[in-house]
Length: 289
Image 1 (cartoon, rainbow, N blue to C red):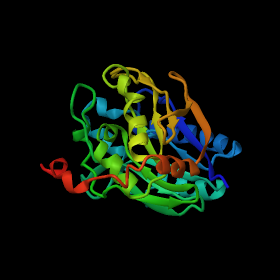
Image 2 (image 1 turned 30 degrees about the vertical axis):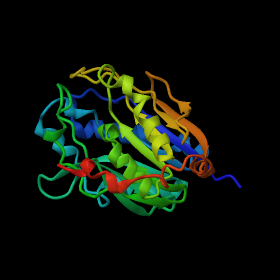
Image 3 (image 1 turned 180 degrees about the horizontal axis):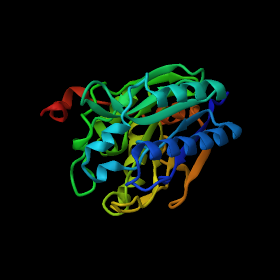
């Protein structure tokens, strides 16, 4: 019998300009996403993921401490608790990317994974933190992740999370495969220009090399007052053969919904024995400092 799963991805513009009160932006974005989550439930979505730092703008375009006010604890913060209640009410697995606080001045770019019964399964913290060109000052806001590359058994399958800039690093993508991921979600905030030509190359390559599904989410719009570039959307789902089975628009708020069959993973692995033929004893150079 096919193991069919209906996936939903939300890409969204910021409701208020970046110079508004962070609390106002946060409340508006949560309200917007709750409406999308309700729509997803009506369409039978079983697992849903939002974009990176979903309840705010991409504030890493500047270095201002007032954005620290968007941080919350996971799982005890109000947004995670709200999403746990929502997941239970709707019977939907949720991946919820937020700005996490874990002690005074200790902040992470993180995402919680909540099962369809509302239970909190755990979180992933973004490992690779860019600080590479104007508009991406992430080291000012985030510590590197320290929880490894967990995979969570959910009602919709075994789920892993990779966040935005992580996608440029194949090592973590391989770890997720070794840990048994069937679907890897990559919530992102990435703009046209420097990275767009990689958007539909790297992650399909990860899907092929590691033989799992990838769901890539990107926000849309040009966020003021920074205008660092156009967040070009085009969220998509890619199968283990590297084929895109659904792609969202470039320039509008959208809930992308598509069905996948997790049995395809076994079919692909029977044809290409990449895990059998690995030679980890020869890969020492990869883990050298």
